[in-house]
Length: 357
Image 1 (cartoon, one colour):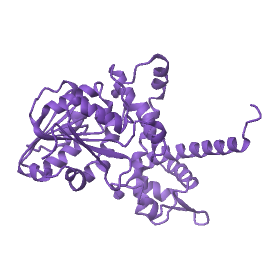
Image 2: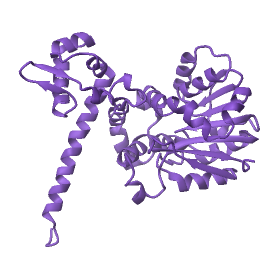
Image 3: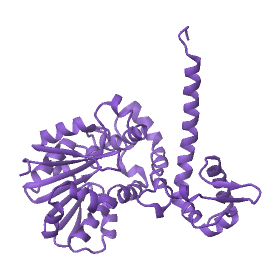
Image 4: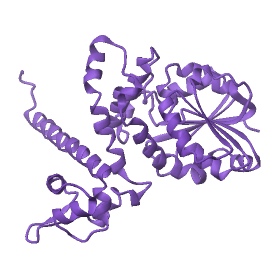
């Protein structure tokens, strides 16, 4: 290895990898704790043994006991060896339970097993090219719906809409709204409930997601969902507002989708696009929160589903410079980029075909 080998540096790096391995295991078990409801049960329990915790959760004690041991080892759960009890501190429950919504990080850990499930297919793609179809991702719609609840729906009325001056008032009076890549439709349903005078349309290429959206819509008369490709949208000048929450980057044809969105807007309309706060430069992105996680999601899902359709494979980390360029090329003359105060991971692009008066 030569005289330039730094043994101390090698040891530090090995220690980093060991911590990462332990953290990856914590991620899997945190996902299990969320999906089984164990975190929620323990939030409301005094210190208890594994039998009581399993009984309260309606689960098998042997599995619950081993999960508790993993959570104890990770410092998530506190264990009293003399009493044989386990407890979830309130300070930990504040980040791990459904009652902590919209700050339940346990829900986000579901991405780890979701992405790991397609690893074999991704490895094949490294050799042969191509991608992995969205249908291969199992619980993607359900996991994404929970993410949308916390990252978008919880902030929609109070924080996101005011990014566009006068938008809440316009929606109250009656407007036409399209949500591109609507998924399970929770954001659009929230808007339809809040603004009964406006008309809302959700568009998504996934028939499975649209079916779920229709079931969950609750019969709102001003809300409809359609299966369709944003790049083939043919409704020129029909909408006052178009939204796309984490949707453009995984389109097969993102440039065409943006151009169609621009054409679908009325002259004074606005396009609100939420995307990861990348910069388009990996050396800058590396310093941002969750950069490794976001690039991993991009590689194992966002890029892969686009490439599976013969698409551009833009990826979640396409970044602000690329996004601004593509918005301009699509016909947007005015673009403002804004961040919410307590969200370091995402940016909101407010784009118009003409500067706002």
